[in-house]
Length: 184
Image (cartoon, rainbow, N blue to C red):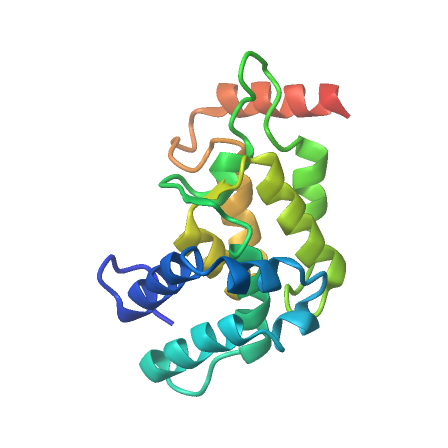
């Protein structure tokens, strides 16, 4: 699935679906009531996203993952431009604390699959609430769909603010690690 290119059909389908969902309060509410990934499969609006993506990408998609992610995206009220993991580390207003604590962030990284893990599904929804329901729709979709070691590493780099720094700039990383250790 091509989600990196700005003009990809998959990106357009996901964003169009998310915008459509936010004009249909009843359908959005049905998805938001789901408490586990399997429940999302039975909601028509998640099936709409799935069928639209299959038209663009073909049949080799994980239907369960897409439906679970649809349930999660139903909780996002505003599409943000910064990466999801970077958003988690954004400081609370008037505080030095991140919107999502280092401990909570590391616990999220321990999960293995959004489609099969009810706790992972629920934790991501809780995190969306912590970040005031604002998330980068495409980054969140892509991260959860392709969840694995490479995504977890990218999230760690983004969360700790080291993704754009050179490898020689260790002072900022050491300070971040020290602050994280003090918060435990």
